[in-house]
Length: 224
Image 1 (spheres, rainbow, N blue to C red):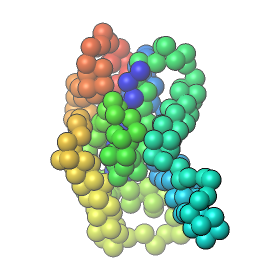
Image 2: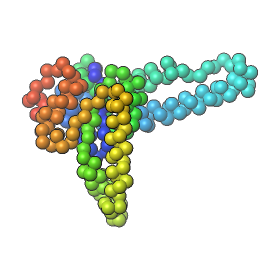
Image 3: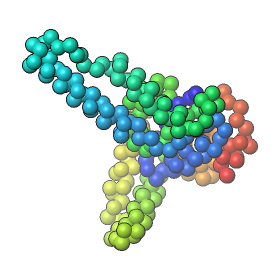
Image 4: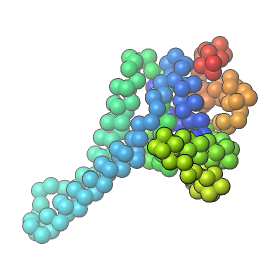
């Protein structure tokens, strides 16, 4: 199966693209797994602390002759790779031989593209890019709705816009930096999905599965 990750700032339409791809037979895109920021990184920190503890014990208690060595990369990385892949396959709820492409669309992955590429060298990336001004307004309206539900109504777009635009710029810059470092990334524009949904989805599918027989009728059904 082809593993892939959708990246891009929050409120850029990543959920829209995820649901569109998930509507195509054989392609499974499950939502936000937060595998790097909430799984790998905390476990990596625990591994670091464990290795530091062993080093201290070996030096102070066993005079450099301790029996346990540190957990090496060659053991840690395959373990995390297998764990993440098992989670994704299990939640796809489909026979493994029927899964042609398996994806995740956690926005935070925008900052961890090199780590994902190290874990999964054959993985592919789709960047959903939307005009930053629209992202800022969408994020503001989302936050405004939450505040109103909580009985708060002090949101001010003019006050919050700089911070929201800065957040969008951070996500976008991280993706561009990964691309500049040599990681292939297919960018699709939110605005193009509005005006040419079929063509935009076709470009994503062809990026994931260059040799595919998915018809335009199947893609049009996914767009609808």
